[in-house]
Image 1 (spheres, one colour):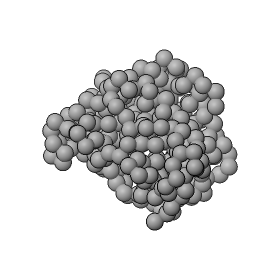
Image 2 (cartoon, one colour):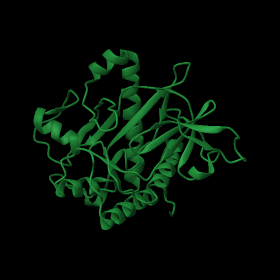
Image 3 (cartoon, helix red, strand yellow):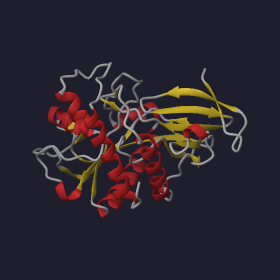
Length: 290
């Protein structure tokens, strides 16, 4: 058990580390949780040994901005972005405790990444059939819900169908997750397009309050959970320029790494370029200088 002391101006009780994930750490503070975004970066479900400076702060601020834009669609878990331990200031959120739902909710509007690989293999993604003849970067006829499992650190998420999700958590709840995921994606994609950004896909997490209300949690529409492409450079049939960690994915594959732990050290130039892309997409989306 790890204990950290809160600053006196917030609370006097210690916080307890409950879980350390690929990128985020979760602490308990009484009835609340403290969600801390680190500078760690993961690709292919493996945490790399080299951090990306300011990444945690970018993810936190961008998530907070998006939670505000989406508040009329779905409630979120945020209590405060300032009432947090001093050592986590700027990259932590005080949150409500939720019963987290055991599915990664993914919306895709374009074909890329593992979705592209699944399509090339099966002609579908998560059981959703897609038209023939699509290529890397193709825009889909309409956004699709392509859920995956929630794998432990070091293991890989697996595609599951909507019917499989229904079998796991019930039809009504699964259908509600699908609807909310697609509504959040559609709102986010529309706002981003106004700012010259394509949201190719995004991964969301939801939980439930004791009364059963579904709540948006964790992060939302960040470079770690989404693929962001510049709209004026989008061109199907090739790899797109990405405002996210795709640069690290591409470098890691070119390095000869086999996608298993431990991951390789990331060179300084790749770190600097990746940080710059995180900051740029934050500034373009929010209209705020970093």
